[in-house]
Image (tube, rainbow, N blue to C red; front, side, top):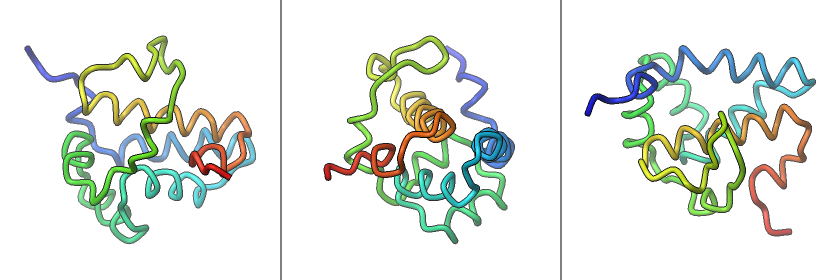
Length: 118
């Protein structure tokens, strides 16, 4: 079975779309970066390096320093698919990120987006 096209797309090609979506709703690039770093364990510098290297999504997630264990608390529908029902691991990680960016754009508080238990 062929890989899904998103796996071979560079994160850098989609990143500006994440930022634009957030900024249209009054949120910031820094918040997008915070979400990505929280999800993957990349530092801001590490994220910038991966963007500069044009790293594809599959590699980006497979080499992530530390996928956040709280990411499994992310629930809901993205692109018509319930995130918690996605079986393929890389696609699930991509959709977790999509869901977090959606929550940011919808005005959700960062504590809730980052699944802080406070």
